[in-house]
Length: 233
Image (tube, rainbow, N blue to C red; front, side):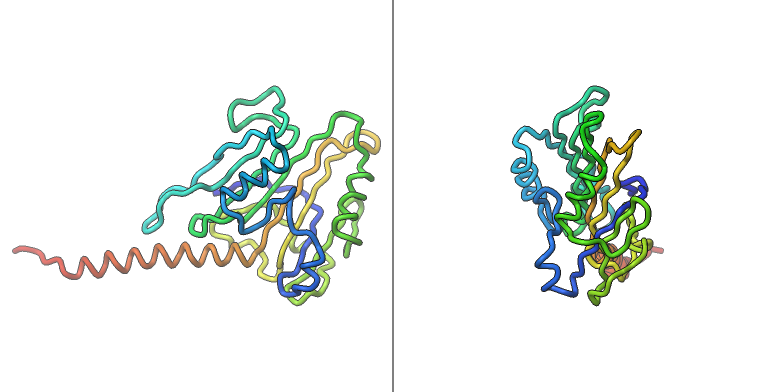
C-alpha cells in the first residue's frame, strides 16, 4: 500500500549501530517515535496539541494468517477549509503508519503549513540545524545529515526516500535511522510548507519478514490439514 507521495527531501540519518551518537541526537517528530503503539502515538499527539483532531486514517487488509489491523493514524491541527473528515486540510498534519504484524509505528511524517510571508526558509533550516547539528552534505537548498550502520557519514541522497510500501524492496539496508525534511519555498525567501519524516530500514525489513513468516505458517498449517483429506471414490 503506497502511503506517501515521493518528495524531494532533505535527509537526516541517525545510526542505530552507534548508540552513543544516536543517544545524543533527537529521533522524533514532536515527541512521536518509531516503535510506539497506537495508544502511545495518540497520547503524544495530544501532548503536542491538545486540540488536535485524531482519526484512524487507514487499515491494512486481512491476508492469509494475518488479520486486518490499523495502518495509519492522522493528527490534524488547525483544520482549514477544503476537506472532509480525515481528508481535512490542516496547518499541521501528522501521519503515523504502523506495521501490519508489529502494530508499531514504522513511518512518521509531518506537513506544516506557514501563513503567507511569515516564515523565512533560513529560519526553518536554522531550526533543523539546531536540532540535528551540522549537515554532512549540502546541495543548493538540500541539506543532509546521513550516517550508515557503521556510523560513517553518507554524503549523498541514497537514504532520501519518503515512500513506505509493502514489500520494502526499494529501501536501502545501509540506511539506519532516517530523518528527512523538504521545505517548499514561495516567492522571495519565504517558506510555505515543511515536510518531515522518520523511518528505519531495519524496521521495514523486520516487518516484511514477520509478515512473510505469518503467511507461510498459515499456508503450511492448511497444507498439513489438507494431507489428511481423502477423496471418496
